[in-house]
Amino acid sequence: MVNERQEMLEKSATLYFGPWYRQSPFFNATRRAGCTSYDIYNHMYLPAYYDDPETEYWALANGVTMWDVGVERTIEVSGPDADRLIDMITCRDLTKCAVKQGKYMLVTGPDGSIVNDPVCCTSPRTAGGCSSPTPTPACTRSGSPPRAGSTRR
Image (cartoon, rainbow, N blue to C red; front, top):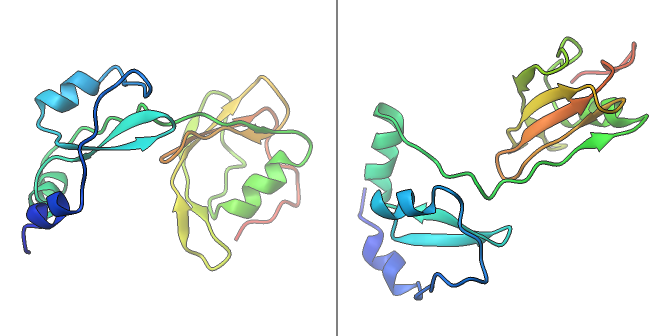
């Protein structure tokens, strides 16, 4: 694999760490770990580049990597059709997801492609629902299990 760093640097600009964007609690640790490039996501700095892509790939495949996902936000889907909506966007049967239990799920597009991969949790707060941070969401289903007769893909 070709080291893409020089090409990346030629297409980038300087980003100043000003007060107009938030830093996660792990921001300084990402700097110490060698992060040299950040994206802006949800008004926060998202670490984007530590080393050449091949080095990063092998670190992920064969070692341990840490990801600063402080940019993620939690959303909640609730209401009478919340369970039906969750059934429509995932291929996983979540009918046995107990209150305060989390299950990994895939959010799929109409063509079967993977749109996102949240962790779905059931919350006792409301009847039906899902809450999910982005880009790698944690999904919180609220309350009741899906209704009888709900469809799964």
